[in-house]
Image 1 (cartoon, rainbow, N blue to C red):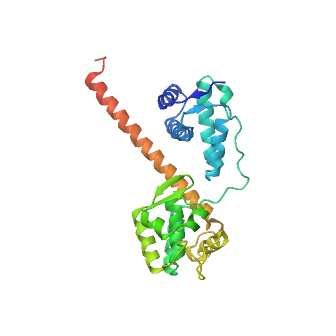
Image 2 (tube, rainbow, N blue to C red):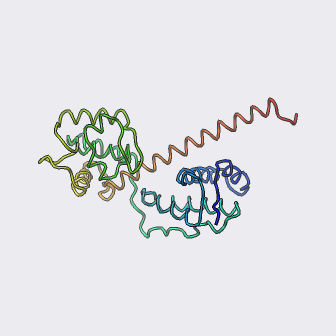
Image 3 (tube, helix red, strand yellow):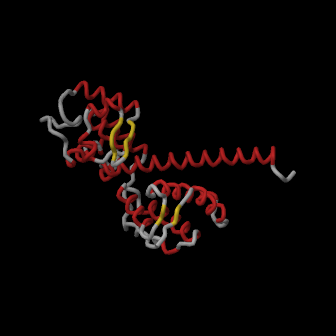
Amino acid sequence: MDGLVVTQKDIEEYLNQRSGLTENTRSTYRARLNQLYDLLPQDKTIHRGTIKSIGETLLQRRYSKQAVNIVLAAADGFVVWSGHPEFQAVARYAQDDLPQPELTRAEYQRLLMAAKRLNREREYLLIKTIVLTGSNLPELMALTAEDVKKGKILVGTEVHTLPQPLQAELISYAHRHPGTGPLFQNYRGDALTRTAVTQAIKGLSREAQVAENKCNPRCLRRLYQETQSHYRDMMQSLMDQASTRQLESEQRLIGWAE
């Protein structure tokens, strides 16, 4: 069966024809459909099972089930509008009975301040690196001084650029803790384990006045993802506003109707 080739022009046409959407919902759907577009294979074609597979990919990247369901709903609406209801994911992910703890930006900042007060530079850098790069634990534990000097690290299958302030702090730490192998080590000079990283972060809970169940790499990485999603939505909103202003200006100058 032939697939559905998706273009960004099609996405905009779909959104423009959905007259029942509020402006906020339209903006959310635009961001999620653009996210879907970015995750499609190189040929940008949807087949049976493609949307479900993308939903599973987002879950693996630690997106919340609610956020993934929004992507699925937007995608299903799009393929139905395009004349291919057979490509829908249909099923949605059930929300957990208990909400997963979410670390706020203010709580993240309190963790950093607590690490500074307690002179725990390693924990400070572990926390900051996860939140600013989205690194998984295996990637974090394998990080070397050479990686830091290059300013680029591999996160999953993507290359992420280290923010300059973080890179400077990591280089300074590496200079004061010379050695071979991973940058973050225990007192014996061995690479940290998953348990050691989690316990080190959790150890700041009381000083930072942050719930212990939020002091873990998973919550830190979720904060990174939510922050990036917020930035993407902001950029899309600015692009939409700029496009609207340009079109309105052109319409005033050269619109057919006087």
